[in-house]
Image 1: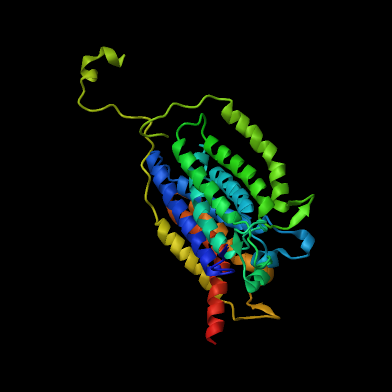
Image 2: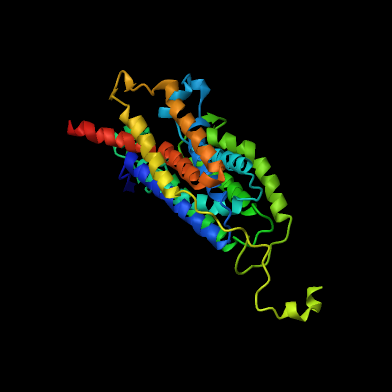
Length: 252
Length: 120
């Protein structure tokens, strides 16, 4: 078993998150250039995505049932990647509407988001409650002090659920890089990434250790159950069309 | 038809490419917007915090619903700058700065405060 080196360390968490955002912005700039996209509205759209993703990660998790005001929740409440993704999606749509940009930006944004999550989740892996007990002699082990602080069990192997997620996003990034110009329609890459992440996240929630809301499932799982039918419907539209042949050079 | 015109067919200049997008105007610095926006938000929220007491919470006039007023105003100004073509890069930088402050702000502030309290 391995230990948790930076349990509850906000600076390590924030540092990894900051590096993830930086890597995503650099990749966005690179991919924008590779695709030959020079529309000046694309940076404001990225700005709306980051700002509203951040706001969404805090506000959209607000739990009224805990009798906590939004202001208190803003300062001390839960944060969620899923809520952040929803916020970023709303931000992109708002940005596109306000700037009058009509093209799809999903293919440009999806690999950047995956890259941000690969790096950002390292901060979670090093500082947060890793997951539920593995039932074996492997996993991440907490000291009694860490267990008290994070609300886990001391001395037993816990699923490194954030490591699972890092592997998923790294694989997704590699696949999106491989097939970046092959999917039939604009925005299909984003639909595929979000759908597979939703499926993966639904599964990994069983070993994440989040609070069970109802019927053995956590809040993120119920949220994912609600949006998965919509994502499956969009996926049918993606794979109902033939793949594009590989195109060399500039892609608009 | 152009193909029937030998002069046009042998013209040394390439025909204009209508599908080329317009060149991206570089107005305003996005990086400067990110840095200024993030630092300004840290200065505002961290600088106006007179102290943090276990029983009394944050001693600042930006506590409670008041915490949203600067962020709302900042978001409105940054959005307006981002939409206006002449200042779009500035606005984009300010929006990204807001995102960075919200995502990283708490962690860095808490760590700074804990390091301060350990030195006292």
